[in-house]
Image (tube, rainbow, N blue to C red; front, side):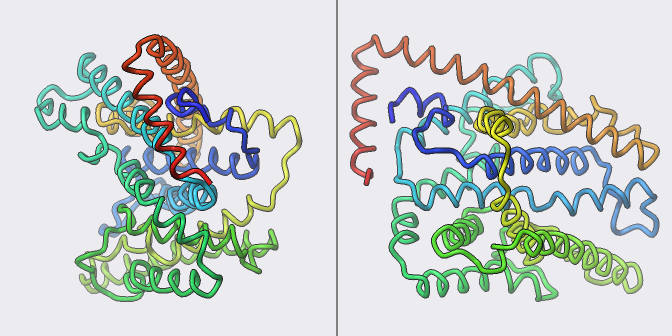
Length: 384
């Protein structure tokens, strides 16, 4: 693959056929991410430590829990494809440039137009914009980039290990980073709550196992759907049970939200169930073409609305602070998701065109061509 394709992140032009069912799931997962950020950062979720949350706060938690699978699902999709792919320095550079462009451009524009509070503008803010990965501007991208750096190791292991070997490794990983925190009534000091590369290594290995060997119960759409629904329902029950226990006894406040953390067993199983459902879906040809055209730009939705400059502001534009009823909650959430998703996709399409044009212009400069050749040479080292 040429450097231009990688830098512009035009994955739709990749010679490997795209699986439209999983690309549709990618779109759905990103919409769910927007829901999570609208509810959480829009301060709509009811306060779990108070006696009454109100109907809106309660309904918001129901939405939250049925969307909490989004991040794990997105990583399952990535792991499903990455486990059979070779490491590409060009892809890493393209991804980093995409993150950097959004970080700097949106962050500076937000500060310049007064969207980001002037009193919070600082050197730290500028450093976060300029070094988005190592400064954790987008925690998901930090974890993803670090995981991709490990791809030459974990990818080779995932492709070469036997069924029993990968099952043993996966069991050890899930026991350590998922099961223990799910059953112990205490906060674990080393628990990253699913926001770190260690958890995404677990998700990666899960996807690799599903891709290589399959899981019997995931071969039936109805069973997979039940796993998703029951996982979400059980998450809600555990969350409310811990809340009730706290309100009655005043204890365990520090673990009330453990059930909705990404590396808790219940959200993890629910995400596997949702992944299994979409893996079995077959889309009509016309829908396949549309989905495959849109899906490569879904990451731009995240990078746009989760930028520090607008992270806690855009929810107000959709009236997050003025919701008075459950019906209004549903309508405003739906409207926000549709608008943010469409705008994010369109912005990323424009970014891709600009970056591709910029790249082609730079190819006229011999130093740039030299760098491109070196990057392609590194890609060749891992091809195979």
